[in-house]
Structure formats: C-alpha cells, structure tokens
View 1 (tube, one colour):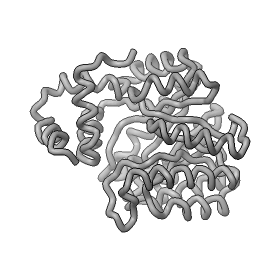
View 2: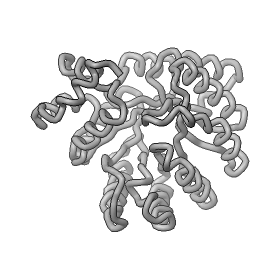
View 3: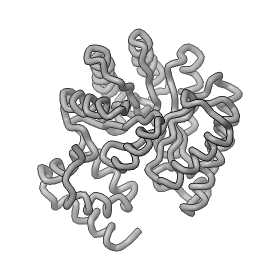
Length: 303
C-alpha cells in the first residue's frame, strides 16, 4: 500500500459527508429505491443488465435481518413492476449467516421463492474467508430446492479450484460469479502476486466451463477480459454460457466495448441508506481503492 493511499484513508473521516456523497454517485446509485430504478433503466437503455445490492453490514442480532429481507422483497417486486432487466445480489452475513445458519437459510428461501414467482434470480455474494465454507454450504443447500440461485467465488483464494470441483459434483448446472477478491487475507490461504491471481482466474474459468458451469466473469482488468475471451474461443462456447460483470462507475468505456462486441454484461448496482458505511468499509479493507477515489474527485460522474 502506498503512503499516499494510506493518508487518504486516514483523513477520509475529515471530509464532509455530503461531499463524499456527491462523489460516491459514480459508484452507488443512491439511498432510495427510486434512485436505483432510474440507474438500472439508464443501464438497460445502454444494452446492459444489472444486479441490485441493498447496502448493509453484517448484523449483530437475528431480528435485524428482517429489514434487508423486506427491502429485497420490495426490490424484486419493483423489478417486475418496472420491467427492469435486473436481479439481486445478497450478502449472507446481512441475513444472519454468522448468527444462525437455519435462520439464514430460511431468509434466503423467502427471497428465492419471491424471485421464482417472478422469473428472477438471486446471487449470493461472497465475503471474507471466514464465511466461505458456510456460504458454499448455503448455496448447495438452496440448490436442492431452487435453480434460480448462484454464488460467487474468488480467484485469489488458494482453495477455489477445489471448491469448483466439489460444487460441480454436488450441484447440477453450477452458476457462479468469478471475481479476483478484495478482502485482505493471509498468504497461507490467498495468492498475493497480481500475475498469479490473473493466471489463476483464467485457470478457474476454464475449469468451470469444462464442468458445464455458467459464469459471471467479474473483472475490470482488460487482460482478464482478453483471457476470458481466449478461453471462450478455445472451447467454442455459446454466449448463453457466460456474462461479463462490472461495478457501477468502473471502466465504462470497456463495458461499452464488451457490449458492442455482442456479449452480455451485467452491472453491480449498490444502493441504500448505508452507503457511507459501505464506502468507508471498502476503503479500510482495500486501501488501494483510495487512490482511484481521489482521482474520481476531479472527474465528472458517469452519466
């Protein structure tokens, strides 16, 4: 981590919250549901679909899960009502994963039942390594009853190749998002070299495709976009076997290039009242982001 990025993180609390909010518009749709509706409609108009994330942290009491569950149910209803090309992404710790597994399973079941009635889909987000085993168990258990659910996997974890192999034995038509990973994990369990992570991403992608998986290729790294296209060409895969995924506000030009080449692309669109906590938490977990945010202060928001 550079001294520059560390200084930005250190002094971020001194920046007025309204100013942070103004510049966070690039990465967060807003605090209200109407804000995310407008953003998703804009993306749909550009030929892109979306996945909607209700911002929130890991809960401390099980009853706190009721709020995000109800918010997600409202989002699913709104997607149907507004005819949006979108689904939802859910953080399992926000629904009680680390407090009560069965309750968390029940909360996800409520969302999946609502999504199934509407022909929609739920993506289970991946969080830090302490939650990986429980998250993958949650996915496998939900797939016993639902086929409209996917999970996410991280290329920088040393275990992920084995996870893909084990999941493909448990789950028919495996569906997951593959990303590099952002949490700071010990070297014992995570690759640290950027080039190794890139190579592992390509290895995992090829392994997944050979096992019949549908993959959300989540990257802003153009080298990995190229590597993914190389694997797709090598295996002669139809475009129904994958999609590219990117975060709101990141690499809009590359997004456009991918879409214009005829590939499906989904944008991760976070929103909610907890936008400030989300922003500061992401910076604490990955201070390298700080430099990019600082540069964004002098760049007009993507619109």
